[in-house]
Length: 329
Image (cartoon, rainbow, N blue to C red):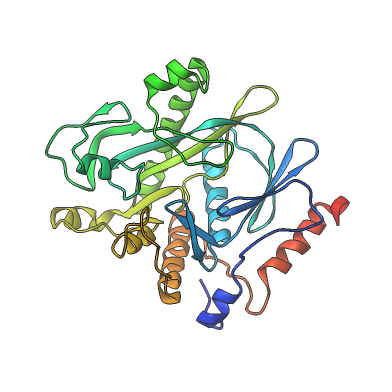
């Protein structure tokens, strides 16, 4: 990654804070992505540099949107034989033109370690004394960051109105039927296959894919399609494999290349669910950006191509959209 000509202040100034373009229809602002509902069952997803955690937007991280989009692109390509994905094209490094799916109201989270710092993670609940999590029994005596005997699926609801995700068990899914039993069976099978592929490929790069979330929809033919993002540092935890065992035995946090770095920075300073989150220093955001770029390069084997100094990301995206979707510009 070549960012030497660009100062720290310029990096932050050139972050993509929003991607609202008045020419495009069906605008919706989400925590990280700005999306558009286009005709002919198409959706436009633009990954901004906004950083969310604990159900809040905490600031902007240089290059984050580009890293997310291009990392997901790598994994979509590498898992297309397991499950079709929503991608139609990539008009810009931050942008996906995608199929508009009927999204299923569940997030499928697959976990292989007892870890985490959010309300839906395993470790905080286990630490409180709970031993049945998402319907799965856990023995006494486990410690943080310990590997599980096998990966487990810990689904959450995905409210279509943008509300908070809530834990749900397989028994509750089969009882309440947010998806059909056949859909649930397929979701579970495909998610475990995607996760196994991700862990295998991550291990080849000296990384541990610790956990991840998947979002799915169905297309006009009823085919299950993976959407949103896959195996990115926003949707997954990645640890450095060669130092994991030593750090685990010493009771230290693993070396991470994902969002947990920022979560741990926050929880060491406040209770993010009850107290105001302090402003994150620019230097911390830059360090965070370096981790995201490092993960992209390690996973893909490609050099990260940072935006040219002085070239506004928003203007570049607008130009790419005008070329891809001239009917709107």
